[in-house]
Image: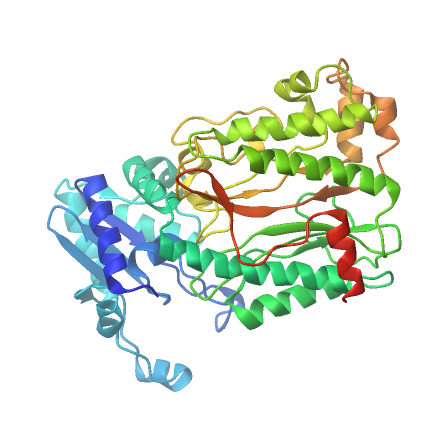
Length: 463
């Protein structure tokens, strides 16, 4: 938890930006796995954490701008709670640590919000993303869950997105701690991966590091020999010499700030020549992206520079014909990189994705609906304080190759006979985390993840 002055300042800025009405914050509650008392590890809503800092289940809050009140609603522990959980600070004591002096039982929340709504006061709320949030909003505001996303306050969303997009020095320190843990996770994988080992062994080892040094994982581990499947959470395969392992894994520290890194490594001692060829094309594209980062540049333009560089390399292999820049601009590049170059990162690994990418990553402007471009989560001008990922990839997806070939998609640019020779390649991705500074950009973390072929292969001699 930060000093209470941080939360007081954040709430004051939020009130000033929204201007009027009541701001409703729905905190997370416990979530059961298979019966009521067997719950998932609790994780507080990130926006609730950002403004109130209380990592405790069963809380909601209001900031009544018009009445100049800040109230946290929740229930004090009963003797039954204490028997199972031990002695805990009271709700009032917890709230005092973040500068909140007024508390009330949860049973009073409906009356408070109901009176405000009936009096004509605007009740601002954020888009719900959990079933219990939707049920509570239905109880408080009389809105059916199907109406709630449409009724969410754009003013509230935009104010939260603007504040949380601009990371402060104390936030950056937390993110860097998470990134450093994440680097250790990836180095461990590079050192241990061997033919005959299961993907699950790697997933378990990197998870152990995250759990032992922080809160845990910032998202479920991707550790797969099938790198062409972008979010592959299956860990059942036994790895063989000549294959590659794609690891996408990050840690979440005890303040709930996230790291997010990807690495591609040989299962055996060395990459094959084919793998080295594609890896070096990707590495050059990665460096192209990093070199372009600065305040004022639109991240979509960085994405385009990167995919153009990938197309240049693939043209050299005979997989693409024509002008690489035109291949990129038409969207034909998505045959090899159907995802975006990166996304915002902070208290959420995809920061504030629940608020809507249009608001967080595009400043309220609409996103493209075209395949490839529609998966670019960040497409706005970069500003100092923005933290995001840079994660280009090159993927050979047999189903996509077959589909586009059958549909005769982009036949002016894509050499399907040559592409087909690579259909068993799988895919590769490398990822780092960056901060925009006043005059450029800085890679986050005090530890450097191995990136070049030589750096990755050298870890084999350490493990």
